Length: 263
Ligand code: HPA
Image 1 (tube, protein in one colour):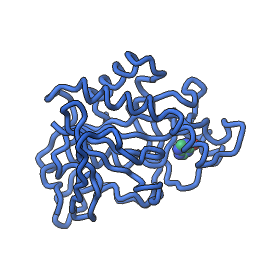
Image 2 (spheres, rainbow, N blue to C red; image 1 turned 120 degrees about the horizontal axis):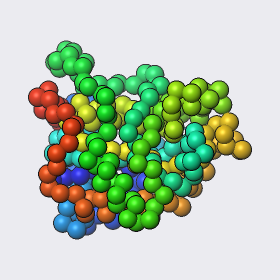
Image 3 (cartoon, rainbow, N blue to C red; image 1 turned 30 degrees about the vertical axis):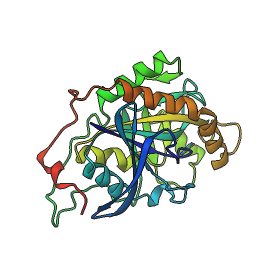
């Protein structure tokens, strides 16, 4: 059983992996540099969403290639990391949120594997986008480690790379969003299309625009990720340690998912 970590902002290296091997994976959407290694006997694949040193902005991340590469490597579950701004005072900077819903406010992204042409037209159910089994495991492990972890939260995904206006944040709050980021969609959607269990652990790095008393900078986001990186990694690794080889969940496995592989 293989688990993948998708490292977001501030999570670019995988020094924790034993016997790491770089494996470039060719997909119909481009090649992805993956790192395959072990942790306490379990196989982990690591990819960075933004490339080394945050070279790729959120709206240009090759989400399809990333998920297709993990599908090719036979990954069963994905633990993704996300830096987020908070829209409510209960979710404070430094807290972790195990996402359970999203609102999609992205614009021009390639958001599906099923484009017609050589692929069938498929309308994938998205009622519960994140894997409940992985979410519950992360939450229990987080609690046992004494971390400030929220069991659920609605993530609104904006197009970026700019931060939001105060009016946008006010609107997102009214719509029920708890946290805001720029990369969660279409990653979660593509994972579901590919039949891979997916969870996202969001680390609150700041209060969102208009809630924060100061103007937002990318540097403060990276700094907050750095401060919390050890706890964050501990949560991911302990979760991998406690995962069984197989689990039952309601992540839909459709036959079309098997069409999604490397080229
Ligand atoms: N907005 C969007 N993305 C983010 C934020 C934010 O406030 N903080 C970290 N990622």
